[in-house]
Amino acid sequence: MTSTLPEVGAARRWLVLTVVLLCFLPAAMDVTILTITVPTLAHDLDASPTELLWTVDVYSLLMVGLVLVSGPLGDRIGHKRLLLTGLAVFGVASALCATAPGPLTLIGARAVLAVGAAMIIPATLALIRQTFGDGRDHAVAVGAWSAVAAGASALGPVAGGFLLQHFWWGSIFLVNLPVVALAIPAVALLLRNEAESERQPWEATSPVLSIAGFLGCAYAIIAFTHDDVGLLEVALPAAFGLTALVLFVRRQQRTPHPMLDLSLFRLPALRAGVVASVLPVLVMVGFELQLVQYLQLAEGLSAEAAALYLIPMPVAATVAGPLGGLVLSRTGPRAGVPAGLLLAVTGYALVASGTVVPLGLALIGFGHGLVQMVASNLIMTTAPSSQAGAAAGIESVSYEAGAGLGIAIFGTVTTVTYRWLLPTGTSSSPLQAGASPQTAQALTDAFHTVTWLAAALTLATIFLAASKAPAAHTPLGES
Image (tube, rainbow, N blue to C red; front, side, top):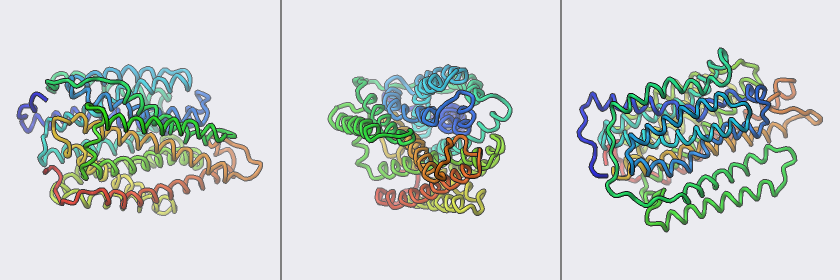
C-alpha cells in the first residue's frame, strides 16, 4: 500500500469500529437467518428438500470464490470503496430476495446477495487492521468483529423466528434495508480510502475454479437427499469439484500474483487460525440448521417459540468475543482454541443427551465465539499490513467454506438418517415430520445423531488445531 492510515484518535477509532461492525452484521446474519424459514418456504414456495438446501447454502458456497476476488480488489481500489459497493449490491439483492416468487428465483437472488456480502466481509476485516494496527487494541477490535461473526450466526434464526411470527418470510431480507441505508452515509463520511500504488494483474480463472470446486463437492453431498440417488449422480460432481479445487491450488502455487496467497500457510499461526475457523464453523452452522428444524417439525414449536429457545447461543457467543479478547491479549492464544472447543463439546453432549439443554446451547455459543475470535486474530495479525486484504480473504474463505460445507453435510446426514430410521411402509418428507408420532420420533433420533456427530467433530478439531498451533506463547495483538 502507499502508506498506512494516518494515526487515528482513540475516540474516532472506536467510532470507525462501530460503523464497520454495523456493516458486517447483516452479511454475517444472512448465513443462518434463512434456516428457521425452511418449513415456511416449503409450504409457501412449494420447495423440495433439495431446493431448500440450495437456498440456504448457495450464499456461503458462492462467497468462497467471490472473496478471492473482493479481498485483493480492496487492496487495489481501497477497502472503503469496496465496502460501499458491497453495501449497495447487498441492499438491492435483499429486495430481490424478499420478492422472489419461487424457489429457483430465490436461489438466484441469494446468489446476488452473496456478491454483496463477499465485498462487505473482507473489507470490514481489512479496515479494522488498517485502523488499529497490530497492538492490543487490535485484539479487542477483532474480538468485537468475531463476536458479531459468531453472535450473528447464532442470532440469525432468532431474528428470523420473531420476524416470521409477525410478518411474511420476505421480511427477513427487508430488515437489511434500514441497516444498509444507515451504513452507507456513515461509511462515506467517516472512513478513509487507501489503495495500493502498484496494481497487480487481474484474472478470473482462480475464483471460477474455486466456486466450481465447492459447488461440485456440495452437489455431490446434497445428491444423497435425492430419491433413488445413483452412483454417477454423486461421483461425477464430486470428481468435477475435486478436480477444480486441485487445479485452483496448482494455479495459486504457480502464478506470480495469486488470488489466495498460499505462501502465507507456511506460517504456523495462520494454519492454526484456518483450522480453528473452518471446522468449528462447519459444525456450528450445520448443527443450528438442524436444531431449528427439529424444534419446529418434531417439537411443534412456532417460529417465535423456536427463536426464544435459541437465545442462549447468540447471547453467549456475543459475550465470548470481547471477553475472550481482553483475557487472551494478556495470556496468549494457545489456550483459547482448546478451551473454547471443549466448552462446545460439552454443550453438544448436553443437547444430544437431552439434559440441561439451555446450558448446553450457552456453552456451544460461548465456545464457538471464543474460538472464532482467536482464529480471526491469528489470521489477520500473521499477514503483513500490505496484505490485509489477502488475509481478510483467507479468513472469509475459511468461514464461508465451513458454513457452506456444514449446511450441506449436516443437512444430508440428517435427511439420510431420518429416512433410515423411518418405520417400514412409512412415507413422509422430513418437512412434514410432525404429521405422525413415527415421523416425529425419526426426526428426533436423527437430530440427536447429528448432534453427537457435532460433538465428535469438535473434539477431533482440538487435536487437529493443536498440531497446527504456533510454538511461541505470544499474547494476542503482539507480533
